[in-house]
Length: 486
Ligand SMILES: [Fe+2]
Image (cartoon, rainbow, N blue to C red; front, side, top):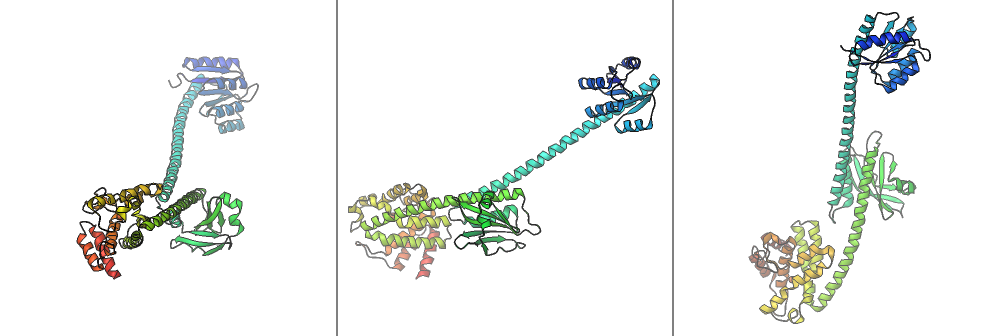
């Protein structure tokens, strides 16, 4: 039997009817709950699980329709069968609208009751099943929504990671502004992006770099630096919207140094909150980058200043070195350009060139200033200058790579050099460059104990040593450079 075990709420003001229907349903193994007023019925509904309710329309306190309403609000899956003695069309329609499953008109046969109960019970089962399906659909929708949110978060994080990565990868010689503008074009696919330098004295800002696609409108070359740009509100909000362009300030130590301009979108050209968030992230990161760079540069400049004092001291002691180091620096810089070395390598040569022999401060006068060729023992002492130089340079923490170049500037390509007998590409490229220029200049210089070689003879000697003492590629590049220079 489908009714077996179903809990049924009977609501009728007639105790006789309650008894009769109750007995009948109990015979079908239903769990019967009885109430003779509307309020009692609602009270029981709260405390019991009910599958089907049979409700008389005429109750002493509240009418049956209100009870039906309350039951449906409490649990829409409860099937409600209404009982009435006098079926009025209005009542019937009203009850159906509120979700009544069926009507029993008094007096009714008990068979009829059972038929109705069976049908209602089956309908209810379908309804409950349906609801479960709907609920799981609802869950599925929720999961889909969560998934979409997660996806968006991942995309956002990926972009943020991309921004950080790109900016962190910039070396000290890369153009931050150009890269910033490029990154923004990449992540937001905006038609145009530029960077303006703020000139507060002139009250204007001037376009420094710009990148735009074929659809991007050109950025004006100059823009009036009106108050709206520098107002506290604009700076704290992090952007100014002017026509379809968004201007984001770059702030260094509470000072606005310029603006990134993003825009040129056609149509309304609006930016979403997410886009603005990412743009602010870029300008903040770039500001930090510039600030660090300024710090680095001031540190670098003070080190260069110290080094130049050191160079003066060295040159006072050994006047030969002065011109020599200058020429070696100049030649190795030219060679670096010809060999298309990286910018940071050229920068290193600029620093290392003038001081590559600074370790000579640790060599005794008797050896350093000896107006004759060195004996083998003296030569061994002289070799220490590359290690002394490295030690001095290491004192400047940001020059560790430069210190390494000084250590290895007397290594030979064939591994016969000092102090570590490095071979071939183990020797830093800057050292391989310095080695050739150093040797060439030494050969062509006048020393008390030897006559200078002619340029031609010196070049022949360099050529002869290419592949043994010197890197063959550097050698051939050096020779072709010197030939052009002649
Ligand atoms: Fe040297």
